[in-house]
Length: 218
Image 1: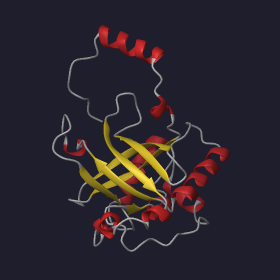
Image 2: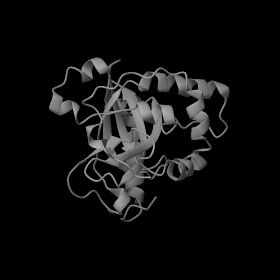
Image 3: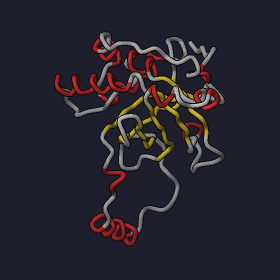
Image 4: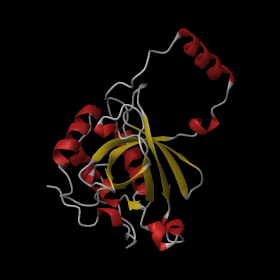
């Protein structure tokens, strides 16, 4: 991950941050309850994709919202947002709107979507992650990236970019890209895939995943 341009934080800024943290109550941020990691592909250019860390919270049982970063560390850059909704809300949307949303079935079943955990994963953690996947597999996501870090932009440039999800094998170099990600987090997508075999596959609405139709990159 490249460094963000600019001078290091001054003592004044550090003091102000510390003081604000002691006095203010950051309720929306405190509602974040899950860190997920997967890959997003540009709807406007399916040859480009970005590994993305999602920090998500629940607004209701039917609506989740996620802040997206290019990494999990303290210097991670906020690159976008994703909203996730249940099928009953998705089906209530106009057709033109539904075409902007993507499914999560392939992300879950392939092992691409993970919930990074402690350095030494326990069976209890694996079970918790699988439960999260059971809840998330039927959700539809609408994602916009605001900072195109993959092309080296030093600051956010241009307008928001609609992002979508890979939906089947052969759409990108899965073994290389997901394998490299797994090495950093100490996980194995093949094991994830096997653990999720029993998760039922929901029917995907025909209006979803429109932007990835015909996408093949082997």
